[in-house]
Image 1 (cartoon, each protein chain N blue to C red):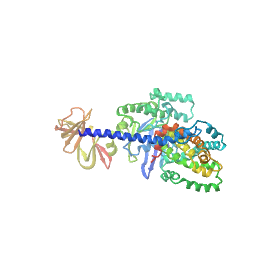
Image 2: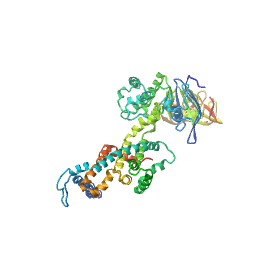
Image 3: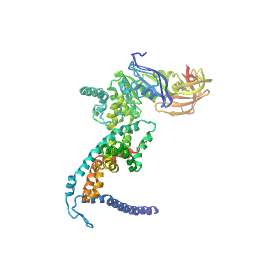
Image 4: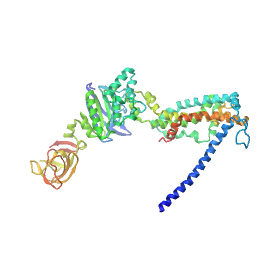
Length: 337
Length: 280
C-alpha cells in the first residue's frame, strides 16, 4: 500500500553487496516537501540507500516508492529523482548552460523552452554570469551550484544530495548549506541528503535518520534526537556525551549495570552549594572558542562540562550539578532523569 | 674548501658529459636522418654516382613514372582502400571490447587484455601461414577481404588497450549523472563516455592506420599475386626498378604516417599513448 501523500517510502529495503548485508530491512517514510538527512559514519549504508533511491542500485528485497509510485525496478533514467553528486559530476566538455540543459534536451524539449527553463534555474542559483563557462573555469562552490541547477531543472519529485558540502571549505559550507535549505523550502521539494556531518544534518533537516550498520537507529527531529537519543549509539553520535557505566539517582552516578549519558551542557559548576549539587574539583580547563571545556572530579564520577560564563580555574573547589541524564540499558534509552 | 673542489669536479664532469651527449645526438641524427635525406635526394636525382656528395643532376621523371605505372597506381589505391576500412572495422570490433574491459570486472578480463598481445608477441609469419591455410579453404586468398582481415590483426592491440585506458579514465559518476538526468545507456555512451574518451580513440585510430598501412608480411602472403598494397609492391619494386623509383615510393609510403602523427601529435606526446599501456 502506497500513500500518495508521501514524498518517499522505503519499505523493507535490503541490499547485499559482495556477500555482505549492507542494508538490512530498512524502512523510511519522508513526507512531501520534507528535508531528511541520512546521517552516519562512513560504511553505515547511507550512500547505498541514496543510490537505491536514485536507481543506481536495485535492492535485493523491498520497495522504493517515490511520490506514490513504485520505482523499485526502474533504472535511474526512468525515475522522478535528481541527484547532486559528491564531486558534482559536471561534464567537463560542456558549458554550464549545456550541463544544465542536458536533462531537458533528453526530454526532447523545444529550444526556446529549454533556454527559458535553464535561464530561470541559473537565476535561482545565481550563476547567469557563468552560463558560457566550462566547469573547469569556475570555483568549487559554483560547480556545486551548477550541479544543483542541473538537478532542479528536471523538476524532480525528489532531490537527492550526496554529501553536497564535503568538498567545500568551512566558511563556504555554512553559506551553501543555508542556500540549499532556503531553496528547498521555497520550492517545497522533497529532499534526502546524505551526510556524515552532524552539524550539517542538525542545521538543515526537518528530520534526521541516524544510520548504523545498515539500519536506522532513530528517525526524528533534530531537537528530539538531541534531547531523547533513543540509543546509546545515537547519543554518542549526536553532540558530546559523558558516558559513565553505573546507575543514576538523585543527581549522581550510583553503582549499577546501566550506562549513564550526561551532556556536558547539562553539567554546571558553582562555588556555592545548590539543591542537587555535589562537591567537585576543577582539574583542567580547555578554552574552545565561544565556550570552555571544564574537567570536573566528583566523588561519583569525572564529568566534562561546557561553561561559557563564570569560567572556573584549574584547582578551584566548588559544587557540580547534573541537570539531566540519559540512562541506557543494553544500548536502549530506558529513562531520562 | 673541499666543497668547492667538489663543485669544480662536477662542472668539468658535466662538460665532459655534455660533450659526449653532443656527440651521441649528432651520431643519432646522422643515423636516423641520414637515410631519409639520402632518400629524399635520390627521388629527385638523374643519377648519383659514388663517391660524389650530391646527385649528378635533378629530375622529376621518377615521380612521373611511378604515377604512370599501372601496378604502382593500383598499389597506392589498394593501400588507401584497405587501411581506412581496417581502421573502421577494427574500431567497430574493438571499441565495445575496450569499453567492457574498462568498465566491467568480468572473469578473465586480464587474460583477455594480455591475450591481445598474443598476435604481436610471436613471429608473425607462423601465424600468417596458418591463417593462409584457413583462407585457402574459405577462398579468401588473393581477395581484398583476406587482406583486410590480415591487416586487422596488427591493429587489435592498439584498438583495445588505448581506448580501454581512455574509457577507464572517464569518471563513472559522469555517466551516472547522465543516467540520472534521463539518458539511456546508449545515449550516455555516445554523448558522454565516447566524447570524453575521443582523444584516446583518435590516437588508437592513427596507430591502427599506420599499422595497417605499413603491414607487408601478411598482406604479401595473402594478397599476392592478385592484390598488392604499397609495402608489398615495394618488394618487387626494389628488385626490378631503378633505386630512384623505390625512393619515390618510400616517400609516398611515409607521407600518410607523417601527416597523421603530426595531427595527433598533441595527444601522443600528451601521454595518451603511454597511458594506453597503464591500464590496471
